[in-house]
Every structure is written in C-alpha cells, then in structure tokens.
Amino acid sequence: MSVFLNSVAFYEREGSNVLKSPKFVLPLAALAFFVGVPVTAHHSGSTYFDLDAEIVHNNVTVVSYNLVNPHGRLVFTFTDADGNETEWGGELASANNMHRRGLGGEIFQPGDKLASVTGSPSRSGSNFMRLTRAVFENGDVAQVTGRNAGVTRAGAE
Amino acid sequence: MQNVRITTLEFVITVIFVHFPVIASAQADFEGIWNPQHPPRMGQPPPDEVRLTPAGQAEYDNHSADTDRTLRCLMPGIPLGLVDPYPLEIVQQDHQVLFLYEHFHQVRRIFTDGRKAPDHWLPSLIGYSTGHWDGDTLVVRTTHMSPDNNMWTAGFPFSGDENTYVIERYTRDGDMLTFRGEVHDPTYYEEPYVVNGRWSFAPEGEIWEYECIPEFGGIL
Image (cartoon, rainbow over all chains, first blue to last red):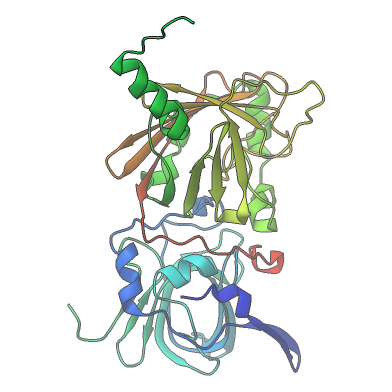
C-alpha cells in the first residue's frame, strides 16, 4: 500500500480550500493487521468534548470531508428543529488512523446523504462534535472510534 | 614463543563477540515495528490519583485546549509522547537504540555506550536519553527536556526544570513490549507521574508519513 500522504492533491475550489484524498480504498484485507487493535488517541478527548453526552443528527448532507492529521473533519448540514439549515463540523480520527480503520479514501463525498451522525458535543458550545459514528442511507455504518472501528456493511453481523 | 592455550569456551565467546556484537551487548531483541496496544486512558494515571504541588495545581487550573501542542502540529516530545498512539520502529545498534516514531517522525536516540550528556547540551523536546540493560529490560533515563511541553493533554503540566527526569523500563514478553515510565517533576508533582504502555510486535507493520495541518487541529 502506498504512503497515501505522498500523493495527496491540494486544490482550491470556489470559496474554499479543500484537501482532497487520493482515489483509492484501503483493501479490507489490510485491516487484518489492526483487527482487535484498541483504538487510542493521543489527545484527552474529555478536555474538549463532553464524552458523557451523545448527540445525534439525522438526515444530514455532507459538505466536505478532509482526511488529514492531526484530525480529519466532516462538515455537514441538516435541518434543525426550527426548520433552519444548520452547518456542523465533526472531528474525526487522524488521517493515518482513519486509513488504518478502513475509513480512508473517499468514504464521504460532498453531497452524500447520511441517515445519521453521532458524537460527543464540544464543551465550547459550538456546532462541533467528536464524531463517533455515521450511518449511510443504505444502512452501512462507519464506526470511527472504539474497538469496532471500521465499516460495517448493512446486514452484516 | 609461549604456547597459547585457548579453551573451547574462550573460543566460542570470542566468536560470538567478534561476529555477533549486537547480540553480545544487547540483552533482548526489540528490533522491528511495534503497534500500540496501550491500556485504557492511554496508559495515563487516573486524574484523581495525580497529586500536584500548589504550583502544579495552578498550572493545571489554567490549562486550555490551546495547551495541546500536537493539535498545533508540534511534536509531543518527552514526556508528552511517552505513550504514543502510532506505530514505532526500534533499531538496535552497538552504541544506541533508536526509537523511530510514526507520530511526527520523532527520532529518539538512546545511547547505550555509557556516555553522559555533554555540558553544552541544550534542553529539547526529545531530551537526552541514555540507557542500559538490567537483565532483559532496557532502562532509559532522559534529561534535558524542554519546559515548553506538557505531561499529558488532559492539562497536566510539566516544568522541564533542571530537576526533571524520566525513567522508562521496557521488557519484551513474546510479541508484547511493555513499559513503565516514571516522570520525576518535583516542582509540579508530589510524587512521580507514572505511565504504562504496551506495544505488539508487527512483522508486517508499516511506518507511514505523518503530515500535519494545524488548521485541522483546533476545536471549532
């Protein structure tokens, strides 16, 4: 497997700079090396996020997905309880760890519809969360954190 | 000319030291790539068990998310990087053991030839490390660490003053490398701050590049 960061392309889009990941998906077989590897993070997440709280946003639309170090970021919108379109950011694991968990490549694309995203809210009260899980409309699950991190296809045990 | 009689044992020992100097001097084989398998809390002590001095408590009370240097794409160094969540490659040489971390491409040189830090050595993030073997355990002592660092990202401070030092003990048990680190910082801590870590041997492991972009480290 190539060292993906050597081939990362950086380009500008209208109104924003977006770091685009290369177009490949980590073969599931490669994940065998990391099956059962406990997911650890260098940062003490509780400093920045309320890990005892959980928030879920349903029917979200992906705005951007940046696979970088120290943290990847998923930006998405959804319609809040007042009927307003709201934009949120979700902190992901580092690019290196996302790849190792089978969550690299272009797993999220701008415009993708997700059934839900789950995470821990930022202690600052901003529209930002530590994203732990995303469910696609077809039922696939992208588990970002925890021992079962990775992609689980819909219907799989 | 004197007749030199060499016993069989002397001959075998000579062959070993001449042809296998690394084996002869190292007490255990740590070479290779290791994947993190650290205990919960990244091997850090429970926060309520950390006993800070008044000065340490004052620093802790003032910490914020900005104090996590790795979110600003600055390498963790020692002691912050003692328990690291990315693969590590260990290379053993006659005079040193090299710890090559994927995380920020950090390189630790642990000198095992008995040398001491030169008088001109300046404090640095990675410090100055010397090591020796205690049986099959590698014991590492690190000094000269920079005060521009933290003990842990949960806000625990690090003074980095001249009284600080770290003792690490690494032991291999099969394919598991365990270590215990004691950070001595009497300015901020009533007793040594102890961390524990584990690494699993990964013959097929890979060390990747760790490019970092500060704009993606902050909390929005």
